[in-house]
Length: 140
Image: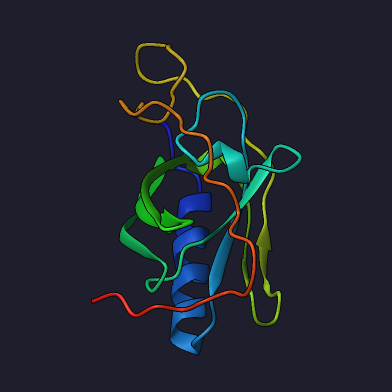
């Protein structure tokens, strides 16, 4: 019998701790191969994601994948990350959290490498950054 890693349980526990304390939980994810993340925000092979309930919808911290929807530059995107690609979770406010080792390619029950569900959307170039004074607008 193969045991499940403690990593997803620790991720859920630290996420809950951050939320209970009023902190903002962030994930640092090593981006390798085909992952369903906004590639235009990947820097040095990593992406940092805010996974607070205020920043994302339908957050699912499962044993194999972390999935949610979030807005990037005003555009809603579906995110799917293998738990093994998470290299840390921490609180933005005080930096407390936990680091993990990158767990390379996984194999599913058929021996095939496991990957995130593929999106049917074509990747889009990010829109140009606005110039001038920033403006806020209320969206209802």
